[in-house]
Length: 270
Image (cartoon, rainbow, N blue to C red; front, side, top):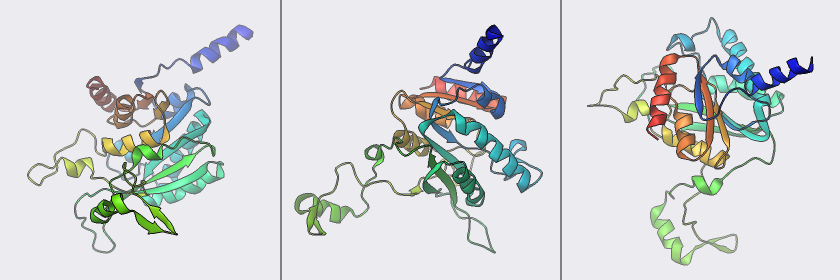
């Protein structure tokens, strides 16, 4: 009986880090140790029906799938780990209360302004954003705010403030040489729009790739060098690529062999 127990324990930890696996997300998460992940960055299906893997019978079926993978992932996070989940604002409105009910700690609802050109909506405002939910498992999480500062927008005023400062609440405020603190609205051009040729969008190797600079911002903010970053819908491999570039360990999976091959090719270039 004890020998059988030892075999079961060893199979839970059979996956090597710094690898991308072709696996179903649920099979993959079963093989990840509990309390082992420092940061999870997850870009799952959105139920936009743009591919077979993004198609479900109904929104209810989509939410059942979403809540199931979320519930499978949460035990894998360390007690002060961070979790980022991408989705549409509508879907995020369902995912947020589910995470709250699971005792996760809400930090931010980040709006990614994709700078993606003009939409064609005629009965509502054109869609031009995606949501990123930022939760942590505890209160003592990593957040490297200095590493993700952005350039100040009021350049003339900031230039003046460098020498004389700005009077605020009776004190002189001087701009930080690294820039301003990062807010909740991220103006980052989408890969689709960024790679236009003669005004036309080329066919992408993945239908919804995330910009590398966007994922790098997340990893810089919510992990440290050597930490383990997980992505259970790795797609074109952007999370793994960003983690490797920034000196973090990574582990990920995708059900589609084509995406796994693409991710591995990108990693070889780092």
